[in-house]
Image 1 (cartoon, rainbow, N blue to C red):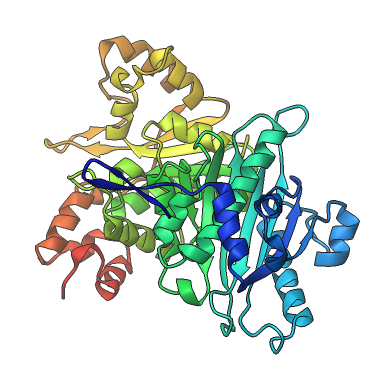
Image 2 (image 1 turned 180 degrees about the horizontal axis):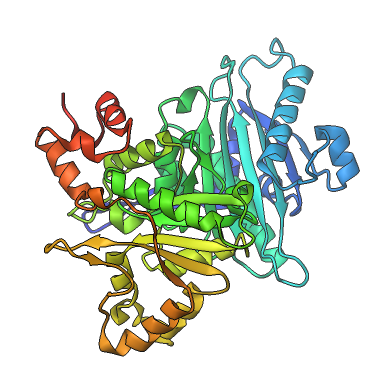
Length: 478
């Protein structure tokens, strides 16, 4: 990569797409296949046009017809061809073919790769902008038995199919180049995926690294980089701790979400969850098997006092919540209405938010909506869209009295608006809560852990203290 000087600072210049493709083509040891479905053969086109492709491209193909695609890669039981499962089948099949057809005796120094994508671009009605899966399985050493793999899910933001195709070609070129020349710097590799691509053209909402050269890469931290770099607005982790595509988890589900710091998760958090979940399941048309619970943490909540994101603190919270069997969402949504808008991308079923009274006070504060032309009314129109309910957990005051939605004091200008949502059943008190635990606060527990004080264990749900101690979370020292 060329370096230009500006004053006393060195600035890395971005290689052109042609330069990237040409560098790959001129490396006599890089050799592989391209399989692209759904948006033309835009990536391989970059390599053909750069020149010298005969030493790099073993095969380029596109099996658009489903019957032909099934004959090559196998039948999809769910009939979903734009899926991670399809991408994995494509990568596996193409790597198997190149290994079978090319003898190592004749190609002792070749580093094989298979690049694949399966994509749906914008439809004619322009209702669905399109999305896809992109990946590469590759070697960085000809003697490497186990392949590295990078897979990612993308969402198009452009409203023209041709432009989406061109963007996909750029992304694919950046991915292949980064896989070979930035594999030892995965955070940089991630940033370079957007070379010659604007953030308003493409969203990357899931990425996973695997293989021998990525054995020390934590994919959850890579997802956090997606958020930090502005590549997506939200990432999700399954209870097993692995990255998961939000669309797969949330699609057509009833959704109950909890926002908090969870630093660490306390008996209050779990009591709020259990009691509101019980109430949510009693709502009309809500069935347990079609309901998804999400524990959400905003990116701003992860920032340390200096404004930087504390990655270790992030890992501690995510690991603890996942170990409790919860699905975790990390988002850029400071305002609740943005979170609800995000859920509405994937489901039109019933939704619920559970929160403490103190959070409800913030929701009815006009200062958070000054950037909207319609102010708080516009925000509430988005927040309480369709079947949303907000379940409110009480707050214990210093004089030992309780604050619920029935005696909450809001600004006089908000009083009638508050009463409207309350009397229309959009705001409901959480019932059967445990009054004995209302004096527990996460910040108190965290402070006690940091000071190595005794007694914090009793403030946490069963088993949580043991996890914190065993995994040395939140700065715990024996």
